[in-house]
Length: 211
Image (cartoon, rainbow, N blue to C red):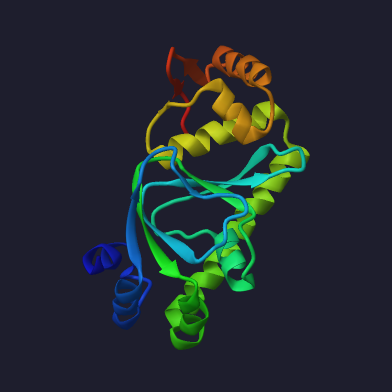
């Protein structure tokens, strides 16, 4: 595990911290679609992402879901950290966007390392800051963007996360992430195809103007 951690976090964490992470943590592989953290779960471990991508969803009052942000290699989830620090149950669902690997750190170590390692403290605060910016962006999308703009941003994010112009997701899955209906998504996808932004295939969506 140490070599894997050094490859991903060696530029962030000192060797002593990496050694401690190796001693107390578990390495876990996951597959596309796996639920890593669910609503209401007691958070006992915090994830550090080694490879792959995970989408973070928030439950709304109607028991639907809304996509907050994606986390990638080298990231962690600020919402999970907040639950860890507050010893509260999870208010998010973490779903694997791709296959990957995550290191699970016991909650008990988080506060200890905040005082012990400057690099850990900086990492936690930077993670909060980055995720806050992404959540503010999600709020802006909801408040100020039309659904077609939100859909295009979503597709561009998916393309970037997967490092591919091909997006494999059903219209219903997209609708769930954007908290809208499949009919609306299908109509807007067709409009984006007519504009030359995407190409709709039987089992995928191809981005023609990747940004």
